[in-house]
Image 1: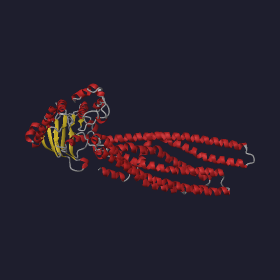
Image 2 (image 1 turned 180 degrees about the vertical axis):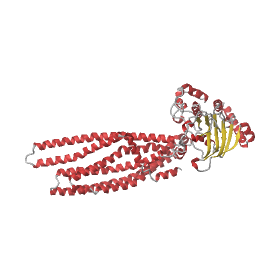
Image 3 (image 1 turned 180 degrees about the horizontal axis):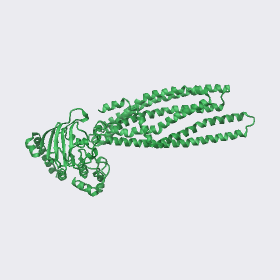
Image 4 (image 1 turned 90 degrees about the vertical axis):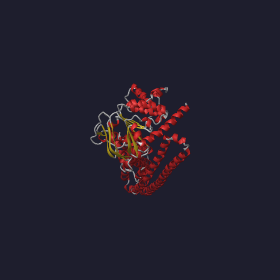
Length: 608
């Protein structure tokens, strides 16, 4: 699936992506126009200087040729010199203003793009995240946004400046000397053709740079997330080799891009030099013939620089435009991604839940393809009941609890809560009434208090403490010098697995949900702690409809219903005593775990 995504990206970026990114400037109305107004004033100031210089030279030439230089001539020189200084100062001031305001606008656009990306990534369903790697999403929210920002803040401004400067210069050249202006006119279409050709060649190369950079970032992200596993298996050398290979691929692609543009610039300068040589030749002939003054020739030469400088800038502009175009396409690929799970039109708010849950002939397959992981599943949970899900890995236990809060939608059949189809109610009203403790405990950087109150930021300290006590977490929390204000570190790295699990349980219980999902919530604790947590959970699950996934039968013996799953189907259901008598599969699991628990208990006693 990832390779298919790569092939779609390599086929070409969203050509309208850059235009859409530039349209973000329209959110700022007059502020978006400011840098271009300042640019116009700065460009006009710049264009005025060569004409003043030409006039000064002609004034000097005329004064030197005269028998007695007149006082008026000196006064004209001083006036012209002051005018040159004034225009230069004006150009400097407005050039600063254009750069500052353009940078401010580009940062605003980057801010909006990152916020939109983050909001979209938060909204996208689990199926999207299953198909896309974290590193790929991170590089788009950082490096790709920055490349778009650079073009909007610099490249786009330089492009407008180049167009204004070339257009204004051509107008002045033709008003100065038509025949000499016609000499350099052919340079422009030749140069533009070269830039179009190189732009066409370079854009796919920039796409490959971003793809290889994404791959490099993915390796980095995975290594940082799994650093303990890498060190435990002494895989640092092989991971370093893998990273080096990805870094080499990025460097090789960057060198390929540089090679293309290293060839481009000498060609552009060659064309510009040919144009300058033609001007020198034809201008010299006109001076000899007396149809062109020295001042006019100098003025023309300065304006000629204003033609060649923007042409040279086009190389940088095309580089930034190519990178920004590719990056914008990748950004809007995320922003345009369709969410598999959304509120349907007319979705209603789910009233306070009583807790009756029905699975009606539910089948489910991931990504709407492949073998179903759930097959025609039907059962009903009454309010306050505890439903235990038991089965081997891959039997469908996690899929059931993923369908209840609509992390995914059932492929066939329906799921109802108090008679409401979960697809007919809003996601917020559904999920806010379900407390969840997942198998992979996720804590966030911050304090223990912040993590417990994650789902209810308005909770009082008494409520937080009560939830922690119910989850058998209060004692170990208070053993820390800072108590509930103890930082947990990134992903809870400063806590043990059992401690993280109990904080996650407290976080779910603080919501006081009517529906409770516990996905193997005691898997990371020892037998003693498990017994403590189980006693607390038994008390707290009273009055709540609870779905419990457990690897150990000892944690679900008191469940109202136990569903034994195999390959997505319910192969046995009932209470513990009934299943032990009537289900060979359940009896086999139970007996095997009795042996395992006995061995573990003996080990604990022996260590004591």
